[in-house]
Image (cartoon, rainbow, N blue to C red; front, side, top):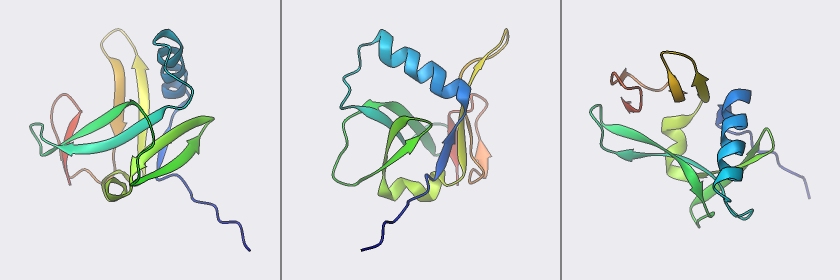
Length: 115
C-alpha cells in the first residue's frame, strides 16, 4: 500500500500562524479543533471568506500547514486553490488578509470576492 500525500491548497504565512496560535491560546480553543478556511455566498462581490476554529466535518479535507490543523470543505478548494492567508499588523492595516489568485474581483475591504 502506498502512502499518499495531499498538498494543501492554500498557504498560511508565518505572521498568520503566529496570530492564529495567539488567538487559540487566548480563547482556550480545544485541541480537537482546527482552523476552518472556506467561502460562503454573500458580501459585496459574491463570496465571503470563512476563517475560524471548528471541529472537522464529514465533507472536510484536513491539512497540516506549518503545524496548524486546517479544515476545508472539499467543495471550497476550487475557490481557494493557491490562496495565501496573511496577518498584517501595521499602522494603517491590521488583520487577516487573503491573497487569492482565483478572485476576478474583490471589494474594498478585501474580505469579499468573485470568481
